[in-house]
Length: 342
Image (cartoon, rainbow, N blue to C red; front, side, top):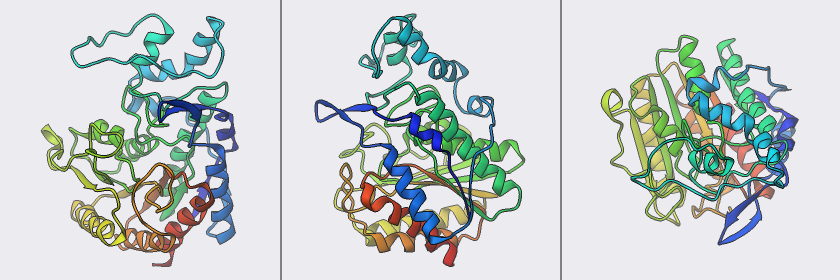
């Protein structure tokens, strides 16, 4: 299994977030990707390769082009007002407010975001583009005949909506990858999101479509971020009815209950019979993750990888969350090892 990695993620460094009512250094930090890369390379799964450039067109297949333009221009707009970095949004639309893009940069920030979890520094846009290219290069590997690949994306992506950033996520890498598979001829694609937090962006992007099955195993939104999506009765709409599945689990869930949800989700993937599976791989389900409340332990990730491997389908792993930095490399590497050992 090849790993796709770009050092350009380091451009997204020194960023902050609003947490517990304070502006603090972001939990999503460069060390995460480096710990993962080191652990995966130490296991000897396969070569680590650089991403190829894919341009912005694949991003606009799932994101509003105006949103992509905003991301590309934000730092320039901000600095033109002689304002200091970093950049955080602080205004948002409430239900009933109109969806008209403001002219000012503060208004645009609120228009194209849903929380204060996405901070821009000077190198953020370049890191975003590189992260998307990492995912798309993973698609290239699968299309070229590889049975699996690991896209070590940073920043992550699954919270990003078609026209809004949030939860550390700017471009939805898993959604971009799934659409790229479809555009290249895949009849059906399944996205299996095993991150602790619900992949609200991925759900909304494909909610009315039957060609991409989206399944999420995550913290119950009555208790956990992103709070406003991820309930079990969200099954898709229109043509997509029946092609979205959520497995909300309560705080304190251990591997027995979590593994049952995974097994059920995998049965749904098998019944759907996709041409390829995209796994949104978050390991913030780990018992010592600083911002999560599940109780999985490092050996459990071997079983997770093994269960996904039993699907017997081409599989692209796309890195999402995981914030226990000292353990993140082991947990990701265990997932991939469990997959490869089957």
